[in-house]
Image (cartoon, rainbow, N blue to C red; front, side, top):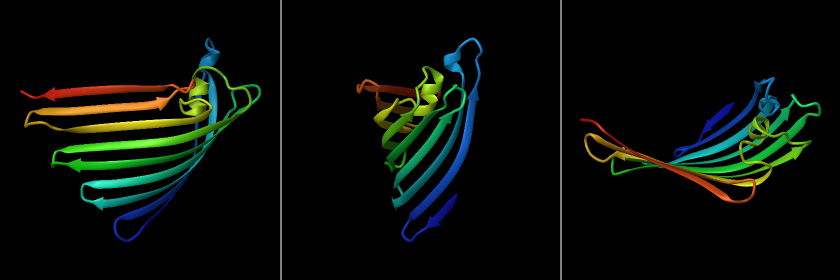
Length: 169
């Protein structure tokens, strides 16, 4: 892991990570996996003003499921752009867009292992979008909005939207 801070609010960061995750379910083979993962991520973050920050990230993930008789390997390359913005002194937002491509070697299992190997997008290219905003509408009322979207395995776009209003009395 390394960090370099440049002039004018620019920060460069690089990380190399190794992780693993396991799940064993004797009754449900599609929920059993043993995944090793290596990840390399590089990012550039820029603070433009006190209320606006941008980040560009690239990532490569190499994953292998050792649970199957013949190991399955996944290679994911991703590029993401993220913007944080504060406005009117009481609202904050975060918007991100990511393009990723996952290539597989071996027979992709069904169920939890497939989800873990591909990050939920399946093999091939995918777009992932996210928007979050929150703020105080008044002294006792807070608004939160969250939305996500992603291309599905069939190429269709799937999205969710959640709106919450909290009031204190």
